Image (cartoon, rainbow, N blue to C red; front, side, top):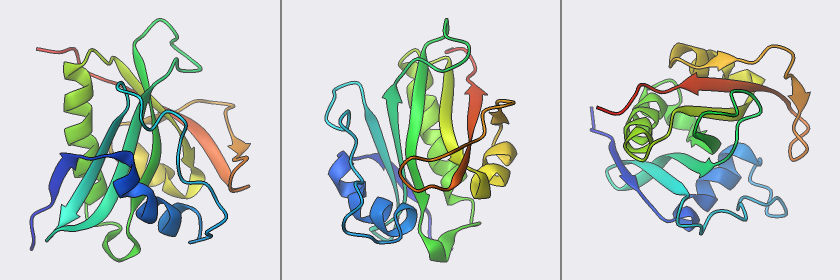
Length: 153
């Protein structure tokens, strides 16, 4: 099995995968975030033999709960269709989480697609009760999720 290489990337590297997986490859749908170029934003790609197969972006953002903790919002988590369920998404989240903890993050939060909740729950996230909603971008059911991070060593 080919080893996944996880590394920080520029946000634009992730746009094509974001569009294909998260926006039904619709060229009219936005796949950028106004915060993409901010120095505080972090973007990670997971690569198999040089091919991008996982994307994840993190932005400093006050969580809708536990507002006293230093929080980052996860957006645009996408795993290419042919490798979903392989554990590659979990590997990207583990690398990203370690980097975020080193930067002082205490928790992560996201608006997760309900179809992906099983993945997030299996990787240590929890749902926020009563937070179910339709995404304004996709009109798909989402739920707010949260993950407390361990303290930095």
